[in-house]
Length: 361
Image 1 (cartoon, rainbow, N blue to C red):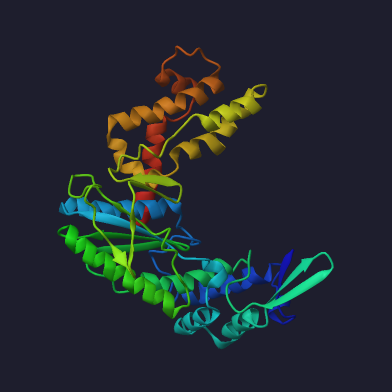
Image 2 (cartoon, helix red, strand yellow; image 1 turned 90 degrees about the vertical axis):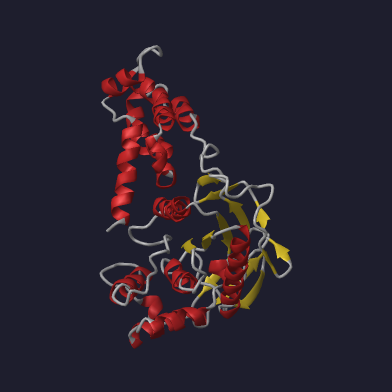
């Protein structure tokens, strides 16, 4: 068993009105300093108020859609920072706080929080002690905030024109568009060089084996048989035909067919609650509907297609039959009326509209 211990200091005893000390310090930093000084990057979607997986996927779609509108080829790079939270350099965190004009008392509080931390590993009757100079404390409330402070500096890098970069915590996505395949290759190499240099500066590294590229083949401007070749340090980035980003499977043709919506959840719920059907409506609203609508920020633009709308309503049939106890021969429209539940395609449009209007604020 390993325990991470900190010094018995004023920070470790800090509390206010019964709130946890880390929550107090994080709220103080965020609301009093970072928001005021505009230090929270708009392209960071992880651990941010008003941001989520849905907004991240929606932003990714917007970046791709620019290339579609301009009728130019585009590709997606997905990068993974190795051991991000465990290896982040604390000096970088403290430096970013000074850049945000952090008051001295708050700065001292955070610096004290990082001081003299150690890891104690217990096995049987033996104990091993290790100094811990890197990373943020595991499970801490303030850890994601401190990581974002460092990650935001990568989002501020001056990238080639026609590039879009965003992050969800330590997951980085880059969309590269250009006039042709060769321009994308040049831009891709330049972007990787900048990101690797950023990693060296902050003592972070990328897992190049998990770094992948997905060309956008929709429109026929790129194809998988002759994709852009992006290389860095004698390593060629792997080309794939689909990527999973924050729970949504994007395919190179932008059909989202691999982002399968199945009956699995409703089947499980049916097995466990077959004798308590009165609870199934709550299960539908609390679990099944959110599951079916997950990722609408990415595929919501396809709701204009009748095939997609019909597919959503078809997926809604089984839960509605369970709720209404109706015969299987009844129409989907009648089921929706009897159950008093909004058709899933209309619900999806509403959720997508909320994401769209929130993004435009």
